[in-house]
Length: 336
Image 1 (cartoon, rainbow, N blue to C red):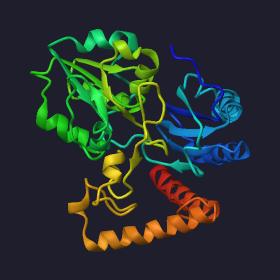
Image 2 (image 1 turned 60 degrees about the horizontal axis):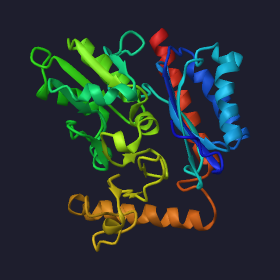
Image 3 (image 1 turned 180 degrees about the vertical axis):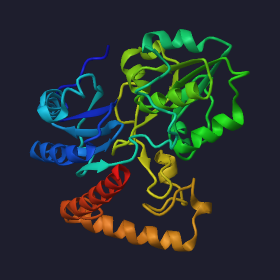
């Protein structure tokens, strides 16, 4: 296994766990306070079905946060087996800290997809190559189109989804449990496959496999000379993508359409920072472009002043409190 790069300044933790959290609204303030006290940045999503997110900070502060999840009485040992992937970077990958309340930590909108009740068969990275060599196997990339654009596994099917909720439609229109006997799936860190595999099992698929720990775990475990991975891996932070050594690949992201961009695309006459890129040039209206230009101008002003873009922490806190109150009211109505 590749050694950790402890000399780099920032440690990044991508984590998730599906677990019953009926008190998830009450957990939000404690999580946010701890993260801010330890100068952690990133986003955590908390819902009744569990926790998901990526945060970054000094190695000591990230380690303290993981210990906090394991040891704090408020969590009642529910995060003891939480799945965590680590990587390292020299530049801060996030600008501020957010803890968001959500209905789902991975939005699929399918009640039958419950990973706390059933999931597919986990396949470790060192067994993955042998599994996907099976000619009878259907290999599914459960990620969205802008992620798949950077890289995928040999022989994988791209569902061409713009968001994860469309995965249900892809399955209904493309596959059938009567004819598709074996399915193997993968995603960035493993969380989407937990839900996707639970969904497919609920639809009657019998043999469903998924890569444990996702692509990031595979890249960390499997030497490049033995790898079946082709390209780079999209990640949801300021690095945009990492290569097989889990180092930033040099991509940036179009803020208009989310597509990752290489040097050639950034140097294109069709690229306007924050407004459009060669991928979305023809799909944006003049109104959308003007709105994007205004947003980009505000971001540049904030950056020049040394502030996080789109408002400061006070504005972010107000939005989080509004969301918390809304979910609390909805939860109260459900109890009534």
